[in-house]
Image (cartoon, rainbow, N blue to C red; front, side, top):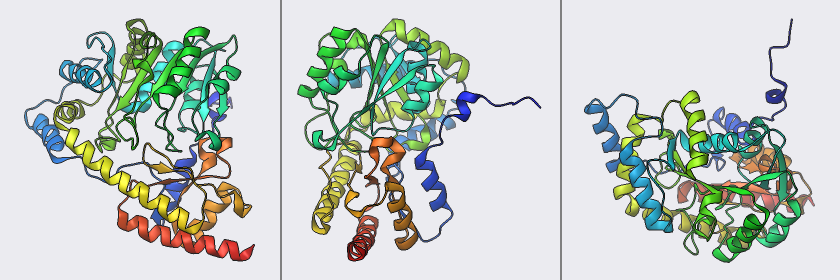
Length: 389
């Protein structure tokens, strides 16, 4: 019988995050710090708008690119927060989560064999999506001593004649690292000089705990070179609503829209009406959740210091990325033992790239009460490991 499978798909590894999620789902007594999902419910006024849209019978397709009202609110929001101006009619698309936006942006921009630069550790979808687009992924290994930021030197060393796109994943999942304006200005200079493009994944833009997030698209000469991606899952606690968006120059957006039309048709109608309400009246909700995450972040950093566990201080998203090299185990071995012995689930750093070896991703998108219980268990586990040594 002829092989019915695609060699390309067979060659892509499954998500390392899902592996631990599936294990934990079979356990009744485990505490999971592994999933990057807000523990808050979607704010009621946003849910109400979704419910109201159903009651009004708004159950039909929207236009392929999304509700006109939602696209206009996205444009207003980006103008208000980043001082970037987009054309709602031609430069904005509403997608099924930020993940779809990443996929269609790559497929719209890449010719087979062109290179996509992917800083790692980073979100698990970038490399597979690049491969599916026919690109050659080129990994840039970010370093703890640089607070896992992308440096201009690292970028310059990775660029070749075949480089087409840089994925810029900040604030970063899994490290919590951010890029500040001065960092981005050095990167932007190289982008312009080398005539390449950027897919800037800013899904955690609203969740920063130092300075206000700066989009690279806001820097001189960069908007025409950028696809800016964001969404509603993280900032508004709307993961299950499956809604994201992308903003890009018209010539790129026209090609992204083709793929979206044929593969998706349009994003969920109910979710789009709820998102309009989120953008109009959700700033206070975001501020409240951000302050709660920041409290948890500070708690984890204090606890790590108390137990002598090395961890650089992250200022974005809702993850910490502690180093466990002192214990002489791989990240996966550490995570497996922690789950087996203490019933606490974390994600090995290698789920986000080989250079994540020696680290763990711990999400603090969980209640402070759960975090306290989990950290006590981690502390006991680490004490045992040190005794074994």
